[in-house]
Length: 279
Ligand SMILES: Cc1ncc(C[n+]2csc(CCOP(=O)(O)OP(=O)(O)O)c2C)c(N)n1
Ligand code: SF4
Image (cartoon, rainbow, N blue to C red; front, side):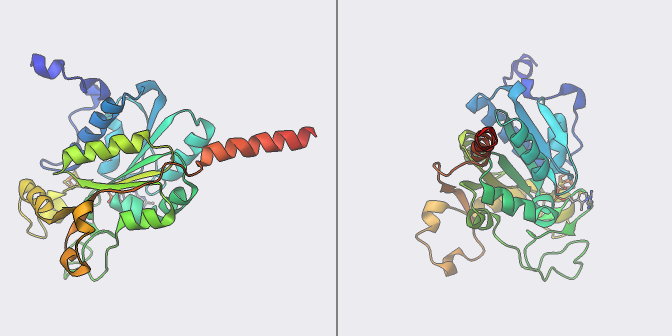
């Protein structure tokens, strides 16, 4: 008991909001744990850090975290976060959302946040499904998998969120999973220290609506699958597209520190406007 009470990450949680609502075996708690460990590692000031989410099982995370938090509308977390960052550029702003939230209804916000290189860290809790609304397929659901809205198999093709973020201009991009927690903490910590738009694709398991329907076994088996199919980015570079089929590339994909950051550029615009109106 004393060990629990002395745990240095306890201060990051709102004990009054626990226990959480997530199903037993849900990967989202592991991702939230990785986030607070990364925050601790970097030494962020709790009073100068804002955590914003949309709507979904994953988007419940900020409710449990002892920071200034904002639970917004489905797909619009990045728009709210952009407003906060522009109004108070000195704050560290972190955005959390599910793959439905970030890649479907919020997909356009993702593209333009990447393009602007605004100083936000976005973590997509990517469980390949709409968890909260009971298992509709998302843009991350692999072809052939079952979902409540694809009872005979999904015919859509998923896309690679990291490649999308990189192509749209994100200056820090990485991927890890609920199995590869050490890597995930490291990527989040680097994303937090990065000046510019940082995107982490954090793969998670939904044993309730994705795992059960697709007979993927319990949560541990779903995490073992991550272990089997994931290839570190360095090794992936030496592999052919054929060898990479059905594999998931993890690690740091983009890290370009010296690109102009949006809120700093905006400050320059404000200064220019002041100068011109005075002259
Ligand atoms: C505008 C709008 N459309 C639809 C919904 C219903 N809705 C709530 S959560 C959700 C999807 C959640 O899935 P995801 O973002 O992948 O997160 P997860 O629950 O899997 O963590 C949807 C469609 C909503 N709340 N608002
Ligand atoms: S429905 Fe899925 S994503 Fe939602 S809490 Fe349960 S296991 Fe997690």
